[in-house]
Length: 96
Image 1: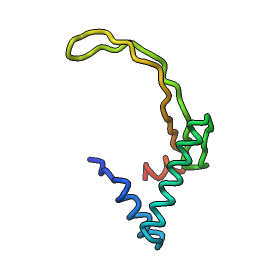
Image 2: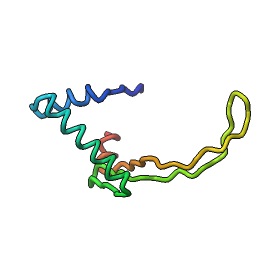
Image 3: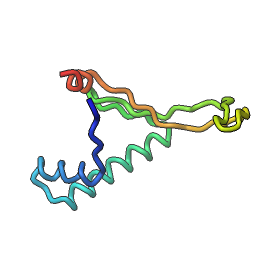
Image 4: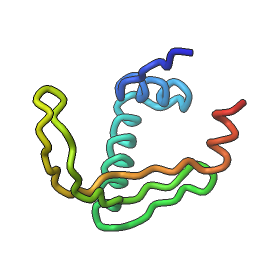
């Protein structure tokens, strides 16, 4: 089954429709929630929404990869990434 892509604007439109609030209000709330999650995770906070999931920062160590065009080995730099682990309620909903 092909997954449908939803843009941020479409997500905000859906939230506005479901909540009965204006699109501009929903856009401000969505921006604030996403920004707050990003800021807190960047500060090494682990954010847990019980049943929905957990957001946390994960360090990705440097590693050697190959350039597929030249075959040359290249060393990547270590960097931080975002990790999301789905909670039990979200997993159940996805498997209905």
